[in-house]
Image (cartoon, rainbow, N blue to C red; front, top):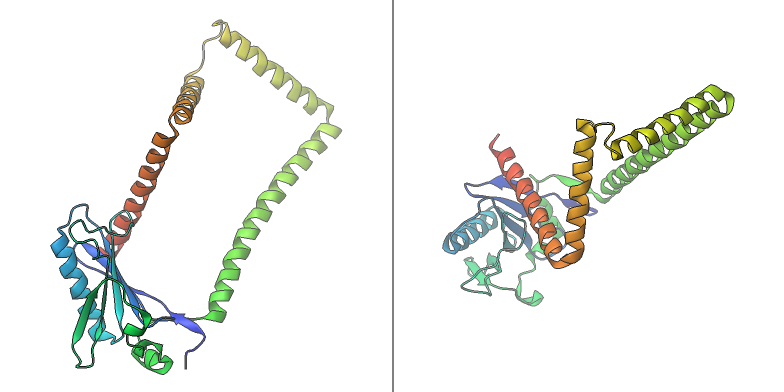
Amino acid sequence: MNTDGKYEPKKEHREWYFVEYHPANYFKFANIQLILTVEETRETDIIKAMEKEATCWLTLYPIPVMVSVFDNKGDLYKFSKIKEKKHLIAFFDQRGEIYFHWGLLKDEEIPDVGLDQEYRNNLYSDFNFITDTQYGIDREKRRRQIDDGRFIILVWIVLTAFVAEIFVYFNQYLSLIAFLYVLFKAIQKILQFTNILPISKKEKEKIKEQTLKDHYYYHCQMNPEGFNRLKMENFERMRKEEIAQEATSFKK
């Protein structure tokens, strides 16, 4: 009997959204998430899709469900006409009929069939199951990979500095070459500054890039609210691209 762990979610693609079913691992109900993949969708279609998915998954796995919708930026969808329609809860009532409720319910108002571990195990037999032990092992493995990466970078930095010090200490010619290189770069900068030596194309691009950075930084300092809006827009754009890529992967 599976007791120490959780069932992993299922994902399926639809025409203009994809759906994620998260089993009722720790609560009385499962979670169904609809993630829109298009910019514009009629609210009536979204409502129908929520009720359709609730019926579909509830029929397959008779455990209460809560359905939520997220737009193509990953934010919870906001209904403009009926504000309370943020979540849809559905379950089989005492007559064996599907009951829909828009909005949240008190815990005691939701059937507790989902708390029966044996019932869940039989119902979710086709779901992937990950034990708490395996989850801990995977998490520890990821942590070690991050730590190993940091350690390798640190060793590389220290080793590079150590080798450089050895060359400088044991090779006076190398030290002289380094000094002459720095002197050459300094003279080069002076000649470029006085327009005696023309600036290379690569150097011009570098200066232009730095000038743009300074320009952007100045305006960000002058208008922090505008910068925050731009930052949020960038986050939204990246999230939209992630959702679009995930939706495309279903079609392959």
